[in-house]
Length: 113
Image (cartoon, rainbow, N blue to C red; front, side, top):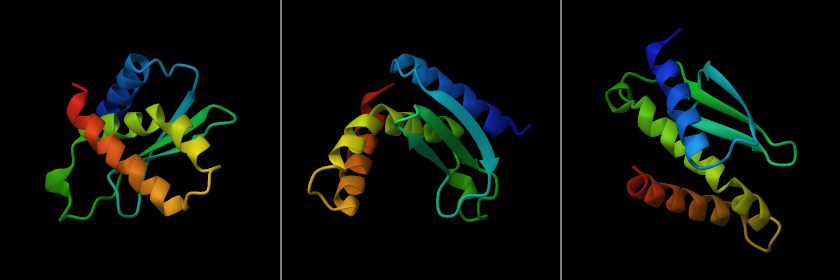
C-alpha cells in the first residue's frame, strides 16, 4: 500500500476521533481524482463517509502533495458537514454554501494543530 495513503488514513482517523466524529462509518479509497488532492463524500442521513486520496496527481501538483494536510482538511469538512447539510435547505445557492464552507475549513486548518 502507498505510504502517503496510509498516512492520510491514519491522520484522517486521528482528527475524526479528536473532533468526536466517531458515529460515522468511514471508507477510504485511493484512486484518481480530478482537480484535487483529496475529497470527502458525506451521506449525512446514513452517517457514512467516503474519503478519497488522489492516486494520480499531475506532475505539476506533486511538489505540493501533503497527506497530513489533506487528511486534516477533509476531516474538517466532516466536522462542518451537518451545518453545511442543514444550510442547503435554506434559500442559499449551493455555490454560496460551498464557498462559505471552504472558507471556514481553510480558517480552521490554521487554528487546529
